[in-house]
Amino acid sequence: MTNVLRLAIVDPNDAHREALKKMLLGMDMCWLEAESSRYEFFVDIVGQTHPEVAVIGIDADPNKALQLIHNLREAAPECAILVVSSSTDGQLILKAMRAGAKEFLTQPIGIEELVLAMERIGAHRGGAGLGRSRKCQMVAVAGVTGGVGSTSLAVNLGCALASNASHTVALVDLDLSLGDADVLLDTIPDYTIVDVVQNIARLDFQLLKRSMTKHSSGLYLLPRPVQLQDISLITPDDLQRVFGLLKATFSHVIIDLSKAYNRVDMTALQAANQVLLVTHLDLPCLRNGVRLLMSFDAVEGLKEKVQIVVNRIGLDNGHISLKKAQETIGRDIYWRLPNDYRAMVEMRNNGVPLIEQAPRAAITQAIVALAEELSGTERAEEDTGDTKGRWLAFWGKNKAKT
Ligand SMILES: Nc1ncnc2c1ncn2[C@@H]1O[C@H](COP(=O)(O)OP(=O)(O)O)[C@@H](O)[C@H]1O
Ligand SMILES: [Mg+2]
Image 1 (tube, rainbow, N blue to C red):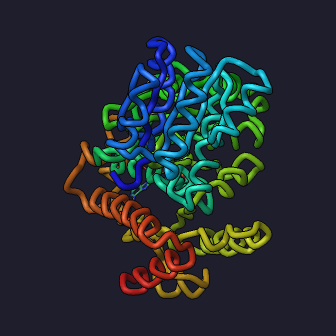
Image 2: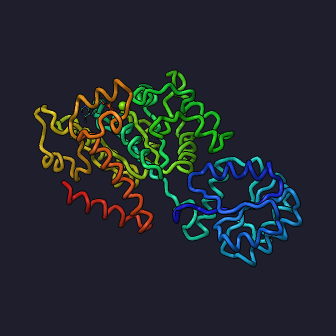
Image 3: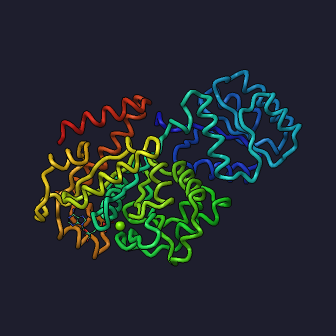
């Protein structure tokens, strides 16, 4: 549990404490180490449990709480103090900060505000907080043209990742007009990305999860809008905020992009840690791949995140060799997925993911191995904390594979 931010909460008001707990624990990376309803015991509790963050609700008795903040600062200077109050009184905020609080949040707490406060705490702690402690792996799945298998990969990768109990995985269908991730998962969603965007200010982590459709594999789906007219309600700015919440809530977020490479898609490409660009081994696909990579040059840091995934290997369509494809695109092939028409068609028609529908098929094994590789990458990131090293290690692995 070293990558989880450990908290202790004190608030004599049971209802407030419960609400606070619910909100904080909805964040995948928060772990409740201890809680208390008594200010006077809290310094001892922190001394025994060593949380990284002490969350103090001060409304029940502000004076006692201020004394607690002061004492805690002395007794456990390494523990960051986050104060929660319904008061907006400047004097009180000042006193709390002077006593040693790092952050002051006013009730009702907005989810974004909370995430930002946690991130600031993390930054102060030299990377031990949210910013780095439990990094969300956000993977955008893009394709060089329609029908290359991006959605098939995104859905099955999501399910494969979700099959690991230590992961919480979300799939966002950003093919806003024609997305079919819900069909592939045989789900009828109650809400879509439009509902989440429109209610973002009111959402807490629990509500966010409840607005998504949970598949039996454990994967949470955020589907595309029902009506085409609603697409215009989703702006890149809104999307940034949705991504922020998803990152704070899930260990993995998979985004299935449209093939329009519009502003919405570009927002996702920028937000992602990694981009899987799916292609076939034929000339039109490779040509588009080269074009896309050239265009990605204009966005700082994007090209470096892109990994080439060749799908439907073995499909007899007069295809180009892997070596030739590598030369054409000018980079290594990161992953290879075999052609398996039958498994894919059955998966799509039955709405059952490959790990259930065809667990032993080569295509399933390749996707499961990719899920493991992505989780491994995430661990390597945490171990080194070094972006450059991470990518170099990645490429090294690749070269050995292809
Ligand atoms: N590895 C594969 N083997 C066989 N068929 C595949 C494979 N991957 C995808 N397909 C088929 O390709 C078609 C397009 O897949 P889809 O995931 O919808 O592509 P995209 O999202 O890129 O438009 C589907 O009919 C799917 O069954
Ligand atoms: Mg698709």
